[in-house]
Length: 437
Image 1: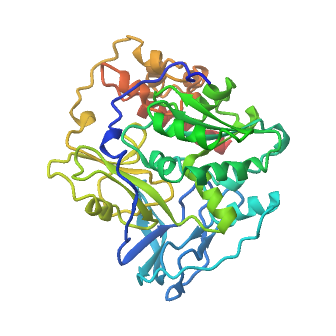
Image 2: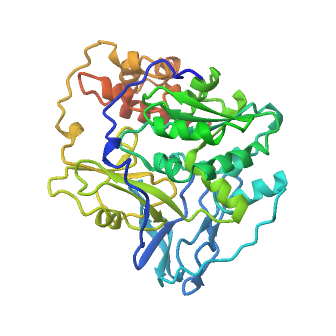
Image 3: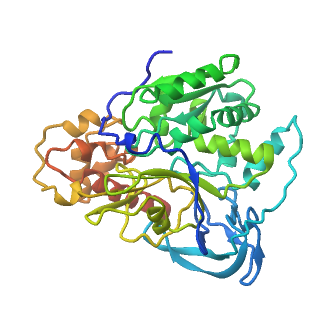
C-alpha cells in the first residue's frame, strides 16, 4: 500500500530519538496512590469502597456512572485512606480514592473463559475491565465496540500514528508486544464479521512497519498501512480519511463512516481484558524533553505522582521553564508535579525553553498560513477574529465547530497569535448555549 495522508498539517521537530530506544521498565508507585474517578469521557465513576477497607490490585474501586462511563480499578493492594477531591492534570480538583500502598501487590484473581468467545463476552470483558481509549480522548471502549448497526462496519483501524512530537509509548508497545496488539485486533474483528483490520503506522517507524507486515503476512483480514509522517495524522478524522478516503465531521461518529478506530495501547488492553480478564490499572508513559536528565518509557500504575516519574527519569534540569502532560501540540501545561498519572496520561515532557512564553504576539498579517495547514480547511484567523469579537453567529457560519483544536494554526502563525485558544473558547460557548436550549 502507498504512503497515505490528508491535506494540510505540519511536520514539527519530533524529538522521538530521545526516548524511542529506551525499553519500557516498571516502576513502584510509592506509598500513596491517588486514583481520580473521572478518567474518561462521560459520567464519573461512583466509588464502591469505603475508607479503611483493604483492596487488592485489579479490584474495582469505582463503578461506571452510566453507559458512557468506565469502571476504575486499584493499581495496588493496600488500604483506602481517604475519598476526597485531589488536584489532577486538568488543573482542577476531582473526587479521588487515595490508597496507602502496602507494596505487596496482591492481585484479584479472575477466570476468563476459554475460546471461542461470544461477542457478548468480549464486550462485557472490555466494559468490566474499564478499558478506554488511551490515545488521549479516553472514550469508553465498550461503547465504541457497540455501534447501533455492527454490520455497517467495514474497517477496524488501529491508530499507531503517534504523531505528537516526543511521545514514544505506542512505538515501544509495538516494538515489545506486537503479537499481543495483533491478537487484540483479531479479537475486535470477531465483533465485525465484514470488517478489515488495518494497523496504521507513520513511516518514521520503518522497523515497526516491517515487523508488523511479517507477523501478519498470513492474516487475510489484516493489513499494515504506511502513513506520511505529519501532524495531526493521528486525529481520528484524518487517519480515517488517510486510510479509507471517507470523511466525517463534528456531527458524525467514525461508525457513521463504517469505521472503528482504537489506539495501539487500547487494542493491547482489549487483548488483556478478553483473554485474561485483566483490568486496566497501568500504562506506558514517556518521560522526555531536553529538560529531562534521562528520557525513558515507564510502565506506570495509575495514581502514581508525576513527581515520581521525574525521579525515575533522573530528575530535571534546573533551568526547566515548561512542563507538559501529554504532547507539546495538544498537551496540558502543568504548574505542579503533585498530580496523579491517569488513563489518559501518555507523557510528561520538560523543556528548558518555553517558546510560547517568550514569543512576541503581533497583529494578524492576513498571510493565510494558518489556513494552508489547517487539516479541516478552515480560515483559522477569521474564526479567531469572530471569537474575540464574541460573534457567535459568524463563527458558526464559518464552520468553527469543525475545529479539532490541534494547534497547527498556532504553530504556523508568524504573528504568534493564540488562534486555537480563541477558537476553543468560542466552541465551549456554543456548546454551552446548545445545552441550555
